[in-house]
Length: 177
Image (cartoon, rainbow, N blue to C red):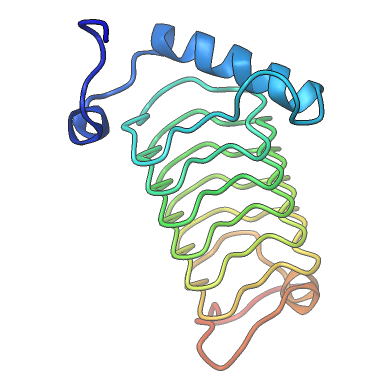
């Protein structure tokens, strides 16, 4: 065991430096490109990644549940099928991010920039999206049951109708066409 190896509890509390991510992201890219046969899935669950610049990074199918990504730059990021449940993404820039099939249930996305994001078939049940910007976001088949959509900017009735809502979904006061 090297001097850099630590227990899970220590790792969870330690912020991740951008340089430490390079080998993790390289192995993850190899894993995705090989059809999950070579390399290794990125496991960043519970890690402190707030305010990092992860623009246009490939994180499809990555494990980021319970990670702190508040105020992170994730615009153009590929997060298809990523596990982001209970993730702190408040204030994150997810503009044009691809979040199709991502698990975002119970995630904190308040104030996030999701303009032009692809959220088709994403699991957003019980997610906090209040004050987020969903202008031109794709929500076809997105699970919005119990989600907080109050004061969401750019959300239209057409977008809402493409998602799955229930009586517990907190809708904005007036969604425009």
